[in-house]
Length: 97
Image (cartoon, rainbow, N blue to C red):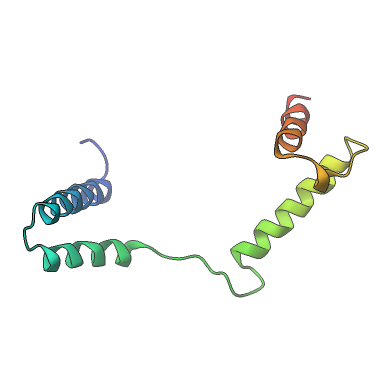
C-alpha cells in the first residue's frame, strides 16, 4: 500500500477484524481480540457536535433552507413539494447556467 501510515494502520485493522470475524464463524474463540479491535475503531471515531447552536443538524437545516430559497427564485413551484428527481433536476439545471 502507498497510503499514509494512518491509512495503512486502519486498513490493517479492518483486515484483522474481517479475519477475526471469519475465525469466529469457524468456531474459534476470538472474543477478546475482536473486542480489542473494535475498541480501536471506537477510539478513532470523533463524533461531531449535535447539541449547540453550531450543531451539524442545525447547519444542515440552515443550508437546506438557503438552497430552497435559491431554488425558489428559479421556479414558480413550491420547492418543498417537489419530488427528489424534480428537486435535483432543478439543482443541476441551475448549476449548468
